[in-house]
Image 1: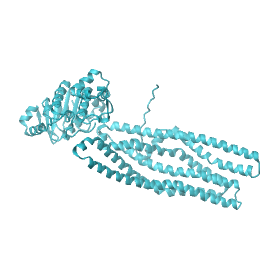
Image 2 (image 1 turned 180 degrees about the horizontal axis):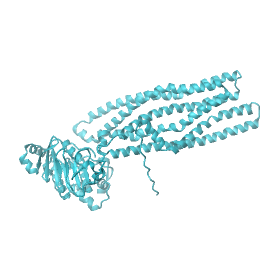
Image 3 (image 1 turned 120 degrees about the horizontal axis):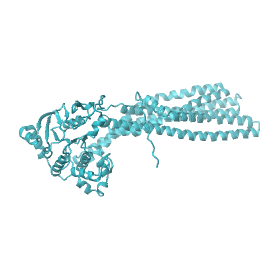
Image 4 (image 1 turned 90 degrees about the vertical axis):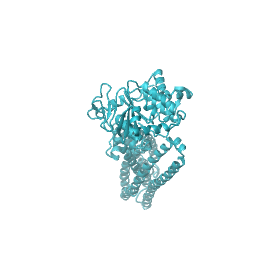
Length: 586
């Protein structure tokens, strides 16, 4: 099996939607040039049969010259075969043009999503990304069709006008003035379509995101009795989207109707004029047939003008959404200085809160507002811009790739991709069996492995939907422990398990991370008792620091918070979800 090299998509021009479409054109100049040549040749060759038929009638059939008639009949057959071949090659070439544009757009969208990382869900909904990557990419690809038959249509229009000029200047004038008039009549509808299409596509992305949120939180909605409320809201939004779709459809139907009706009306006018001229003896019967053929052929370029304008209008709307996504900037890009990370384990500090993560210690962050402690992890992990430091170096001045290699933020709702349980835990690594088993043991996930039909080789659904909340949490923890980063920042790693499992996880986490820096956000006394240092946060800043037992004695606010958490332990089976909020996906 041969390997294929995946070509880089290049750097898109994001100055505007029009420039983005032009970048797609210039990215495949050769193919589009071939498509334009084939489209032009095909369209121009369509104008030849009427001329050949007129010669066959006037030079062969009318005077009874059968050899001349046979010669012209053979010419018609040859032109027909040539046109068939040109049509096939044109279609194949333009299909490649459309596929290149669609895949190139999908590539740049995927690369931008990867570059944005944790910034992506803060600025764009998942539904909008899916809509752009699939729906908009297809619309943009279809818009490039104008580069093939669109160019040919313009040249065919000129050729037909020249041929008609040889027959009758009046007919040539009708054609030269009639076609632009048709395009002008359709023009105002294109502006209305752009407005309606923009509103529809934006609402479609919002609704897709809403559907994803409902599907992901279906268990929680069932538990709190909110499923019907969200379902009714989704139905209401769907009806609104339907109404917007009807508006788009109304404009589109007019454009398509005019695209068929106006060329037919134009054909009738030209044929009527030619028939009157033939009846008056101004043109021959052969020329009448030729004029009818020219007008019939001209209906195709007119349709292409209208269809191309329609496709280009929709393509600009779609390209505008793509450009918006591509121009988003990540919250953290890494410093311009690209300073080296500390050569040896060093203190990771957050001046904004006063938290410091010391090498080789287990540190806990406690806050009555989970978002405050999560924000500290975001800053320490380099996911948001801050004055955080690593040793003597500002974290934002270090190459982001080096930060990601040595500092891992393990969120409570990080993505779980479909695959075997072994692959889900291993991530991008290729660990041996013993390493996987150690990570599973440290995360107290042995029962997860035993409960699946094929153990570590069992299939896991996307986002772990065939696992309970507590099982997913322990699988994520096992994955983080297997990665064995120099600094592990774990958000609420035990919020979805029962007290017994939580105590075991706390002890094993400390043992597994001995000699490495680890920070967790939690309010669980079972976890806090294992920590070397506990930071109690109020309004996002350190209000007190020390051991769990010292803070229990000395700080009433801390004591009240963790005691309330201890009283809230439910003793449910492992894997049952709790009411504590989970963190955003990294």
